[in-house]
Structure formats: structure tokens, C-alpha cells
Image (cartoon, rainbow, N blue to C red; front, side, top):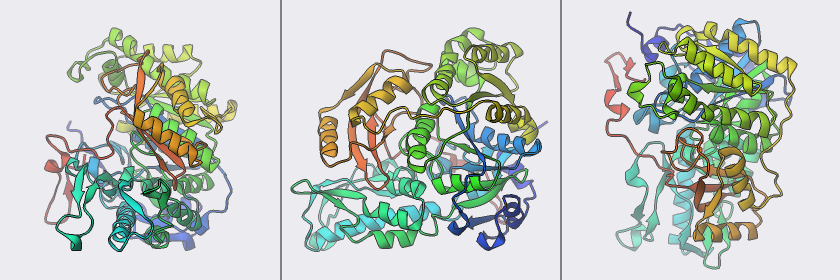
Length: 556
């Protein structure tokens, strides 16, 4: 039997009308702004400030090429909760075009646990990312025009921190020189692009709670510094109003559905390795208002997405998760134990034992550092053996956590019912004692060191001379009480992607530190991390096509 591809499964589904989906979420029709019959934006007037549901955070072990299935599990769990009679919504991040055409990620789920329309969601969707890019680049254009027109603010071109952005992996744009060709074409300077989802505007959109809050955050965005080291903001350039005009529609969360008709808010936020990495606060709050259970996810492993969800998003938005799910696969844990990707189909308890500390550290962090009830979801593959599954379950029980099999990829919501029951049990029988990993009062260096030691399991931090100066300058400007958003490789607890499993004794190297004053956090760049990815040798774009009837193929 030939297994259908994700896009073939999605195209074989008959979606319900979006007004029916809104009705399932209790959203009156007057708040639904339709994009055709299968997607909509929800007016912000729908929010009434009431938290109705339980908040379930789905995260995962450190990712590997073997795959973990975090988004797939999130969707399947939501469908599983619906199948056992619970009112449920799901809140997810939007896919970025860079990975879609590069190394395709599963941002719309996979198998029989997907959100639809899958093609729209993976491509332009409702245009949110284009709006973010336009707002970002408007600010860049106004900054350079200000310098061209006399530079009344005294911006030092050598101290500009604002980059342009594009929603595509393009290493050619990381470092550029622009403004060439004489006076009429601008002031020559070094410049560069970030991918749109790593931009501060993306984080601002995800953390804003209203149009007024959006405008206020944008106005505080620092674009560079004057010759005497004073910050220059978007407000100083009189850009915040126009940027808000570009973004005010994008701020409204998008409503779609799962293959089984569960309401799904898909809005903002990818790339927790280099940015905030969570869907928007507004989408999460809408999900909580619309159901008894709101299932959401954070990007990459729990050391990245979950840490940022808990230490940044929950801190700013006043959210308190009721339970956490950590997704793991036998295959990925064997890779963490030293096996190659082509060696994972054979039972190997030795490799599993060597790799399982990665899972256990993530579980321990969520349970013991953040104080959350936790369940492990074992995303089962056909090659997994009963002995391997039993081994993981036994190790989790030793930590006081249950591990549950999930087969949502192959079975949809039916394969998520056991996980759903355990999530309900956690919410009903255990109480979260939620706390952050560090307090606001710590210095920036102390916050970074705390995350490295408590969450990553490292020995400490090595700050470059440049980073030390940057931290001192930011604290002098009053940003010392901000949370930290650490940009780090997703492939390891450390800043070295080759250190798999649960490494110890390592030091994280901090190279640069900058403030995202509009978003409200300090960005910490570690190791060799870059905020503009490149395409692989054989990008997914080579296999994506469309026929004469407009039917798209090759999208995962």
C-alpha cells in the first residue's frame, strides 16, 4: 500500500465552511472576516479578557534529522481531545517561506494530523508575513532617507542596527553594501538582511495585545545610535503610525481548521532558534477564550521554544500553562545516542539508553524548573519495537512522568485519544506551580548564565569583549530588567550543533547582544547562529510544482 503524501491527504479532505468552524469555537459571525470559504481573520473586538480554557503547551526534545513531530502531535492532540468530548482549539505558528522552499518543516502538521488549507497556510496564507516585511522595510527606507535628507537626528551610519528583511532563505543578503552610485542613490554603508521571521517586527506583532499596544511597541523600536551614542527609534523617525497601518490587519489572528474540523488559530511566530518562536499572544488568548482546552506549541526543542514561551511570552502576557507535553521519537533518541540516520530502523537499546538523557533533561526542566505537570508523547514509527517503547516509559516513570504512545500521523485524532486522556488527567488531578527560570531583577549576564546552567545544563558563559560592552551599554540605557531571547543552534543544548544528547561541562559563547526595545527583550547571539539562513544543496523548491488547473504538488 502506497502512503499518501501530506499534501495528497490534505487535498483529499472536504473542509467545513469557516463559519461552521467559528461556530464550533463560539465566535459570532459578526467577528469573522472571511478569506474565501476555508479561512478567516477574527476581529480583535471578539476578545473580552476572559480566560475560559486550560492552556496546554506542546514542546519537544532537541530536534534531529530523524524528526520529532511536534506540530503533528499538537494537532493530533487537539483532535483527540475533541474525540473524547472536550471543547478544544489549537494555536499554531505560521510557516515561513524560507523553510518551505528550503528544508521543508512540518509547520502545518503531517499525515492525518494537519491544518488546512495546507497549501495556503504554507505559502502566502493571508499575507501576514508580507505585511511584516513591508513594515520592517518601510522603517529601513525611512531611516536611510532621513540620513540622505540631512540627518537632523545625527544618526551614525556605522551604528545602525536595523536590518532589512525578506521571507526567504538567502545567504547572499546576509552582508551587503548599499547606497552606491553617487549622492543621488543614498549614503553608502554596510547593511544586511534578516529573514522576516527573525525580525523584531515579527516579535512585536506576536506580543502586541491591541492596535494601540502595537503602535506603542513599534515607536520604541531602536534602529541605531547617534554619534554621541543616543538611541534613535522608529518614533523619532515618525514611522510608527505608517508601520501600524501596514500591520493592523495582520494583527488579527487567522482561523482555519484541522482535517477533523477542530478550530485552529494559525498566527505568527516561527524560528525559536533565532527569534521569539511562538504564535501570537492574541491567537493564544482567543484560543483560551473559545474552548475548555487550548493546545499550543513553541518552536524547536524545549530549551528554545518552550523556554521563550514561558520566560518571555507568559511573563509579558500573564499566561499560565496548565500542563506541558514533550514530544519524542525512538528514532531521534537513537540519533542522540550516536546512531546515523540510516541505522535507526533496527532495535538498539544501547543507543536509546545513550540518547534518552536528552528527553529526561527537557522533562526535568519543565517539571522541576518551571513547575508544570508533564506528559511525554512518544510519536510512534512503524520500526519502533515494544522493548524500545517500554524502555522510554520506564525512564519517564522514574521521573514521576507518564509517557503515552501517539499515532496521530497515521490515525489522526483517534491516535491521540490516549494522550488527550492523560492531558485531561494532568489538568484535573495536578496543579501547576508555574514559575520563571529567572527573575526580572537579575542582571542581563545573570539571566543568560541562569538559562545556560538551569535549562541547557552548561557550566557557564563566555562573553566576547563586544558583548560585554553591549551589555554594559544596554543596562546603562535602562534595559537591564528585560528578559533575554537567546539565539542558539536548535540541534544541541549547547551552542555546538555536534554535541548531541545531554552534554555537560560546556561553555556557551555569547558573541553579540542587542535590544529589541519594541518587543521588550534583549537578543543574545551565541555560537555561529545566523539570522538569515541559506538554502540547502537540493532545496525543496526543486520539487514543488503546480499543474494547469492550479493544483500544487511537492509541498511535503
